[in-house]
Length: 141
Length: 141
Length: 141
Length: 141
Image (cartoon, rainbow over all chains, first blue to last red; front, side, top):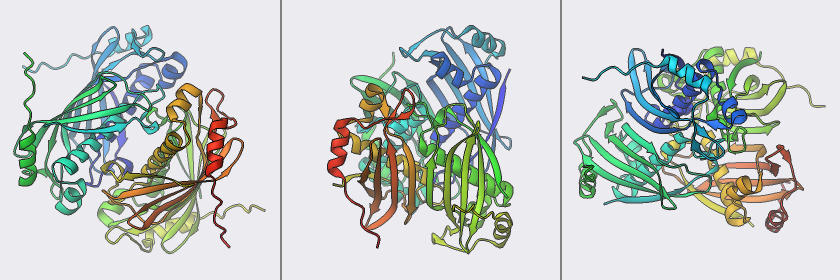
């Protein structure tokens, strides 16, 4: 299953060249992952961080910026979980607008205990939800 | 040749988990690339963007976050150019502090004309400087 | 008339103390002003900046942070225009959540020509819309 | 006594209009206050937040943006403590570059206990340092 959310390119996102300053894309990515956890996996970042004492930092990412985004662009963000490990999860994130992909990101999240900052297994209720959403990556042959 | 600069983990960089929020690392990466261009390649972003009408957006990045950084950490940032194309440049960026690597990034920059947002050849004076600094990536055999 | 929009406190907004880092509030304020212009005054920032060659920078602000906001809080933002000048506009902005005001801001915007960075009169269609929305500040006697 | 530090206008600070996006000024203000505490008052934010369990949030600010700052500008930031209360401190912050003041801010900081998010008295060693630096505001008669 693919989780879908949307965002708008704000004045705060755009650089002097008139296009999104790429660190701002990662704020949008992080917001989309927040939405995925809250709306689709049943775990808000508040519940996780404040009440549960665990978080889900990004440990690896590969991103290709495919075409620029400009002030006012409406973007669709799609999150597809690809691989689920005991303490990690690989997701693919694509930003699209007006039929053009803007960026394609492969991201590895881990479940981290906030007390010792070490990886820990996903809580079962999150694991089950992610497992049910897994979509195999298309073969690149 | 390896370009080296430094930064400090600021309150503005740190998340509720007490570690650097990863989009803030990319602001630091961008700042380090700015320093590299201004201090080592002889082209400030002001000169490039405002006077020259060209910029150097990031089109691809692969980043591994190796260990967390905390408020107050002093970080050394090293930039090594690896491959120089007609309109692009591959660089490796490493953040280190207290003997621990924090992140390792392989980044592809392009030289972009700000009028038509298309790739253009590097100006000669930049090309020559980068060419003189190229360091082959260590073989991974 | 009071313009109303809403926002959510994101992971990206929150500091190590668990509350909104105040510069992030101003990103939210700016986003709310963007929404006001686009949705209520008929002028998106894209239309203004890119097509029209004018913008509306903030020249003065007085802000009181009344109570902290935490990760996940849903906030209502209200914008009330108070005074309309030839080239400026005074607005009041209030953030509220769960019955508590979080911040109260009095902000002066100007209409600025982006070519010479000088103040210019508001376009008539914006002036008329703002004029129709003006609400006198409550007397503080 | 006036504490002085400096900063440079980075690509990350600048908006599509070519000038500093004002929320970024507050990141610079916060960084300058961090420097003041660490370098002049003997209390780094790390020591305060992580080890000491207290912080110093901003509760009120009045800012006038006097002239725009552009990519590459070198700015001097001056912090002058004006009034010291039991749990609060009023400071004046001025950004200057090339003889032009860019912004003038009057800011009220409080000392806050991070456990209950309530105001608490300044630690004595900070109070003494601030007290020794107080400079009365010039009369506006």
